Amino acid sequence: MKIAELLAGKKNGEQVTIDGLTIPVAVLKALEKEGYQHATLFKDNRTFACWGDACSACFTQESLRERTRSK
Image (cartoon, rainbow, N blue to C red; front, side, top):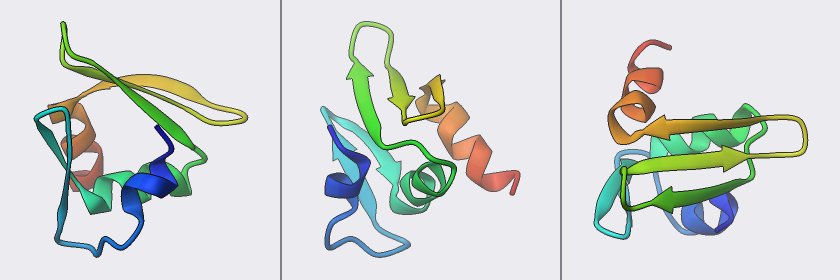
């Protein structure tokens, strides 16, 4: 799924739910700013694969939240 589509119509302070896991809009905006364009959830291990033209990474729900707190 495209991160831009997940963010459509959302504001900071809101949450996006992807297959039962909630991710703050601020986290997705930060990923988009870093160049990530797509995200896929792997339900079996509850991780997100994110990628863009020049980057790719895998995150847990908690590691995504931690990335935003540390900035």
